[in-house]
Amino acid sequence: MPQAKIGVIGGTGLYDIEGLTDIEEVDINTPFGKPSDTIIIGRLEGVGIAFLPRHGKGHRISPTEVPSRANIYALKSLGVQQIISINAVGSLKEEIKSADLLIPDQLIDRTKTRVSSFFTDGIVAHIPFAEPFCPTIRGILYQAAQEIGATVHQKGTYIVMEGPAFSTRAESFLHRSWGADVIGMTALPEAKLAREAEICYAIIACVTDYDCWHEVHEAVTVDIIMETLRQNDEMTRKIIKLAASRMPEKQDCECASALKTAIVTDPELIPPEQKKKLSLLIGKYLTEGDS
Image (cartoon, rainbow, N blue to C red; front, side, top):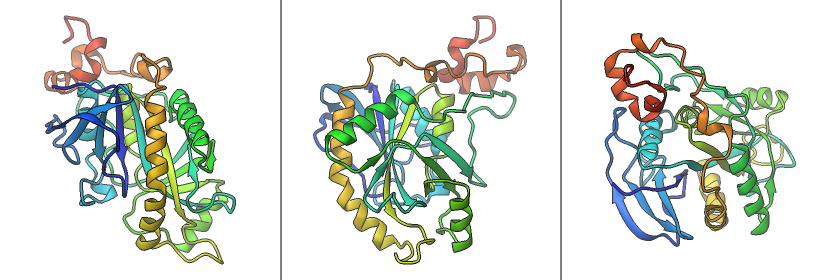
């Protein structure tokens, strides 16, 4: 199977990466089912890249139904060490305008029905998640965005709502009162699963609207989102291209050892089927007698 160092998860409107060479399509099955779509593997700036459209080609999968465990597991199986995620978001702050970009550093989880861990059915792990995004990758994305001339915000708190309906006005005012900066539907459980898989993960959040709190700007609609994303597509691709050439050769952050002290289940009590299912993630932490 071909290998890639960097994974790109495309959001609404981003279904390919320009400039990829040596392209292959890979159809992967995982212990958690099929990913959102076939994964496109190629080389960008000499680096192996795996591209996966989060909602499937043609946008067939709603935020709640995205098979995030399969997506992250599939990228891990291809050797991916760093993930750049593209997310459409609404702004909760006057100064964060439509068509701006934001590289979030914090999350608030308002999802309700999504499975957010690989560790279930007889095995428990508590990952550190105080800093939900890789600081190394965040810095690279921010610098690349500045260099291409994007209006980019260096940090911010991203609220993840369930969807697929947009916020009520009361919810929008509530989220603003918490001091959050943007709201979207897709950063979780991806960020948690990437940390469990010991993959560095960071987001380019593409601001499309002012949610529905703003008295002057009209409430968010799909048409508004798609038009703004079309404007942002070229910038996003340029950032990915620049960032790909600047990723560290090896992970140089704590993301790479997130499971080192996280697994609390006695290895002897982990069900054999779970050891097999999760061997890609936990194999290096099990002794020969445990595995």
